[in-house]
Image 1: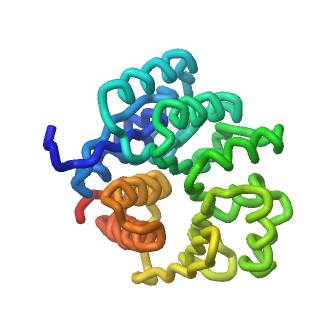
Image 2: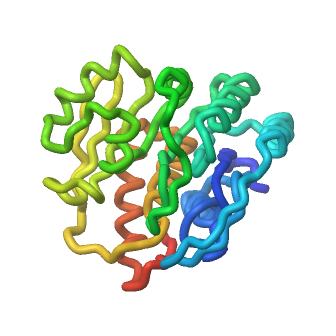
Length: 256
């Protein structure tokens, strides 16, 4: 392992098509020049077009894996993908912070697959707030943010909606524009002090399986490379657009 590469970790599902989940994350990490570790939260049977079955990894196994890696390496950023429950997520997040308070956490809020398989339901809102206050960035799309923050409306002003959130949660929010009914492809990054509009560089792109995984893992890598959050998101957006344009199928190619 190269001594000058920062360590990052993905805690997410295993997709045998390699379009999403830990395999997509590791591809992205490698292209960004960071060293990536991976822990599976689930094994799945799926292709880029069909989701058939999932077997969740026992939480104790995941926690032991996290502890072993943190005992041996200084991990700068962790990306979290699919999880079966908020309690499962809470245990993971709080263990990471206990082992290394300086490690940053990015949660790709995948609540259902692109083939409409549901992963996580939001039932305990107090627990969700508790978790979000330990996380540095979440990356929901428009469908997901309406579940995480029920008062959100795509017709409302993003700034007007998110300003009161500062009183509730401390994490930053990157609202992805792929499902934006009014501004397709336009992302909005909400931080403690500002809201940034991130415009797409390309107008036409091909739909890809796992594009959200690629975006969040690219952000994770850029944060580990010590870019500020806005720049990390901007560069990750460009990387993801290149991934979307790499070919016309749903399985993309990775390159810088």
